[in-house]
Image (tube, rainbow, N blue to C red; front, side, top):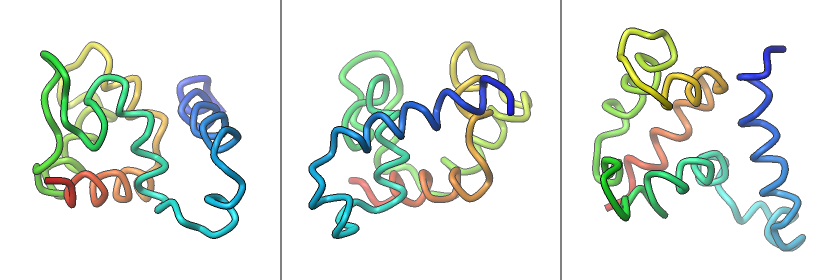
Length: 104
């Protein structure tokens, strides 16, 4: 497994470790919401960017999914997103896209 694949998984594991046990045990956190937590540092909580980084809330799930796949493949140029997207499987990208697609 490449380090670009491991880093997002490590970040999610660390975030889960700091969640209240009741949240994890009860399954209260949606998998897409959990995966999207790594996006909040740049795109803001729930995809509402606090600055110059684009908002991703309110974008369609298809737009987000295609964008992430294009970043991952290198079809869409980036400085950061290509490295981030390489760490996610197609299923994880789908879950992230669906989560942000529901945010308004």
